[in-house]
Length: 186
Figure (cartoon, helix red, strand yellow):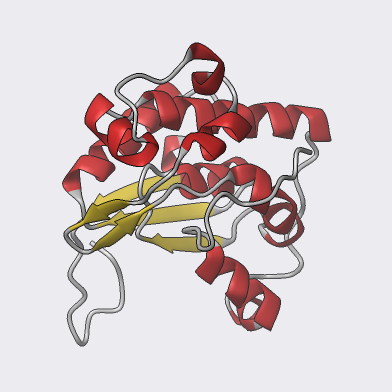
């Protein structure tokens, strides 16, 4: 597995990882669920593909806001570690900031905690990569994104990953309003 220093001080998965580290996840996720039997090299290849597909789905305007450049070299487009290094800024959005999570940085934590059948909710799911990784590991993952443009990127990426990530386990929703007295997402 490729582990490198994060390119930004905060990533989208930080809240999830904080819950795992604090032990709060034990209240939500069954510890008895089976782990994935895929060899580590296959999982690393799948993670690389998820990151490359999500990167490729970004429109030029979003890439420019994240990298500061009009064009992204081919060697960056095909290498998740270089993608993360190329990001020099966050994309400011209506409801917050967008900075993609490096799945290389969170893979070990997800492999140790995410189990088949587990339910995972990613608030501010952006391009969907954390949802896709969780679904790949067997979780029933739901990503909620406020920004419709990021939601469209996630939908396109999920379609491109259909042979790798089961759609039924990678649910993507946009602009969900939670009302008092309602216990589930639409």
